[in-house]
Image 1 (cartoon, helix red, strand yellow):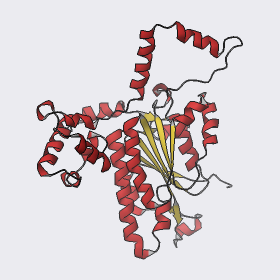
Image 2: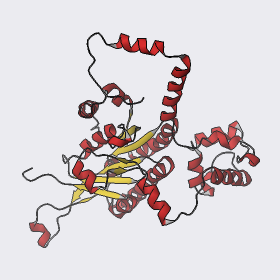
Image 3: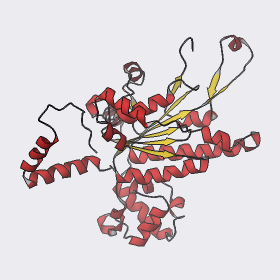
Image 4: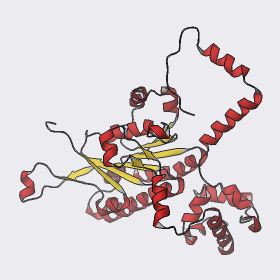
Length: 338
């Protein structure tokens, strides 16, 4: 749905007047408006159907059965193929060596990956969409807001504002670009049961947006264990190919991994699973250009020495794997007296 501001209507100029205006429009104009709305909601990905074309027409001469096999394997767009290794593509049922080479060659043609100069890279970063956090000071620290196509990690103690910021971003991403938004939808993956749609309603009132549209433009998914959390990313890739999304939130990314993997005996397995999950998040950011925002829990570090006299010390869960996987890290602390 396209966003619209919630404005009070004058008496006698209600929905009936709006209906009369729509009726008076010529059919050609109505069709043009519908086409424009569909174009705005269209996701910016390369569809798999293009691979059914012949090799001469930049395709791979695939059949409908081959497309279904790719979809069953979790591949929903050509970008996924272009960014994946050849051996992963050959794991798809019915895809042999020669067919995999044809598919990969067509994918590299449809999704060109080339070297660029630093000047081109600077221009691309200037044109990058950034989502406002709702706080002018925080936007200033982030040089404009949350970057799309990147992973932003927010960690801190309980009740310090992590989930509140995630709710604000779900609404802010629906704003026009000139107001700090991305004119797109948001996907919220909840692992702790802290998602509250009524908060979205109050935030929508702050921005002057229609609350029904705001709620319709936020897709919600609840994860119940670490494996389910990872499978939801496959479903997210399919959702991103159906409509235009600009934000993926995982709140929190490490909570289920802490409970499903316990003790030092499972620490290595937990870190490998967490690394795999973060890699899939980065692929979603690269393939679909969405901003990935994850929250992270913390643990106490009762260190000896001078730090012991500076109050409780905490550090984020996940170790170096989380630190290397995130492009931006935000540390939230409680205010004085809390």
